[in-house]
Amino acid sequence: MSRPIAVWWIKRDARLADNAPLTETARIGALAIPLFCFEPTLIAADDCSPMHIHAQWQAVQALRQKLRLRGVDLVIAHGNVVEKLEKLHSRIPFTHLFAHEEIGNAITFQRDRAVANWCQERGVIYREFPQSSVRRGGVNRDRLQVLWQTRIVQTAPLEIPLIEQSPAITQLARSTNFPRFDFPEQASHWQPVNETDAHRTLDDFLRRRGIWYRGGISSPNTADTAGSRLSVHLAWGTITTKQIWHATRTRIAELDPDDPRSARWKASLEAFLSRLHWRDHFTQRLESEPDLEFRSIHPAYRNIPYENDERLHLAWRTGHTGYPLVDAVMRCLQATGFVNFRMRAMVVSFACHVLHLDWRVIHPHLAKVFRDYDPGIHLNQLQMQAGVVGWNAIRVYNPSKQLADWDSQCRFVKRWLPQLKDVSPEKILHSEDLGLASYPSPIVEFATRARQMTDSLYAIRKTAEAKASTPAVYAKHGSRKKETKFRARIKRAKESKRTGNPAQGTLFD
Ligand SMILES: Cc1cc2nc3c(=O)[nH]c(=O)nc-3n(C[C@H](O)[C@H](O)[C@H](O)COP(=O)(O)OP(=O)(O)OC[C@H]3O[C@@H](n4cnc5c(N)ncnc54)[C@H](O)[C@@H]3O)c2cc1C
Image (tube, rainbow, N blue to C red):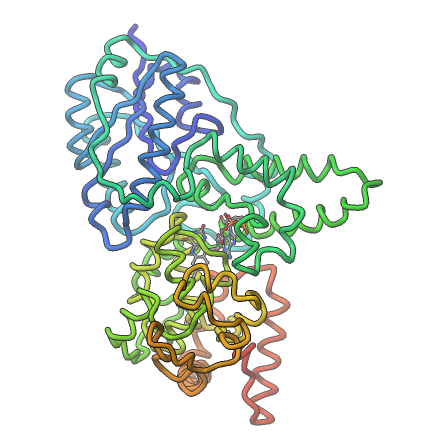
């Protein structure tokens, strides 16, 4: 009997280790056809940029080299994936198609359905495997913790299996080449994305840098090294949450209790693990409700009359708002594809609360300038920072306060705004308008505009419609860990109704 032939359809999972499709291929004794397809519809989407294509291009190139060292090769395609599968099938009639579940945007969702249908029509056995604790099709939130335990905590990462190919497959694969992309010159400064670098980054974090995680990830000057910098690898699948979780737990277990630095290490690594967990928490929301790509998770916040002034939008995108920290962050993102959580939250808060731009309007640009663009985290964070989730405290980040707190010497600001290099930090910190020909005056006045937007958001929160729908939205998507906090918030809200004092969150932080 001839051996089965399995296509491993590579998407956001260009790695050999902890790879279920590859392991399954070996388990059933199939010959493997690793396949990666550059898809024009994805490349043309408004949330895709050269930073992302470059990340995948790099990850797949490195994967190809690793495969070649094992005497096998991968097929590179460029075009509609169903058409490419049809063509491949006519040359090599494969029997199985294995892939990882992708929790992406609406385009990838439709594309995955089209592939499943094609497999059914052709009699090809199609199986998708999870690569996180996120449950396909949604989940009762009370069960999420169980999934985390069974899929991540109690299961060891998969070893690299033996990969076999027939000479005909290897020959076909070898004849396929990467399409030509003209990446910008600055691409050489973007964070590398490949499996080897993912493990190097993890190791460096766990052995050297991670001690500074707690306390180090808030400033844009230190987060580059204090943070794990694993986001690009998780986003493009060159490492998995499970691999990171197990390596971190092992490192914590190895800490020497007699070493005075151990307590700090432990606190930092525990804080890191809880952030890692958030990734799945947010991704599950997108899986359970894919429409949150297009509308806010809470129905009461879907018709906010944002101004969406294109002049303000352009100034924000290009770093010309006259608020030095906002502008520095936007320019840093454009050049490097990375800033830390706090700075991301601040530029979203500034865009939505102060410039009165809809989170859906700013979404494509931000997605494009994040090298680690991960729709599940991204779309949820945008909505949270815009204050349209309905149960979180509405938090307005004041760029002047953030500057004083996290870049008081203006090192970050001066790096990205060279026209301020000769201006003293005191002047940058304390002047509302720097009065320079080379740098714009503030494009809008912060406090009044922020107050207008937060008043509108709190007015929505007080409507009967919002109050009626919040418990159901929270039950479907809210974190169970925060339940006690949520109850406390409801209590504060009731108290504020009684006293007439608005129960506002951390305003103007
Ligand atoms: C508006 C906004 C958009 C964001 N978009 C993305 C995105 O597209 N892709 C992305 O990976 N992160 C996103 N984040 C979350 C966070 O800013 C980055 O994960 C983090 O800065 C990456 O650096 P790191 O790998 O050193 O993170 P670490 O702090 O070392 O965290 C480790 C990993 O945990 C996950 N993680 C960390 N923070 C969060 C969080 N708040 N929510 C969910 N998961 C988290 C990430 O996968 C991260 O790589 C966004 C945050 C905001 C405020």
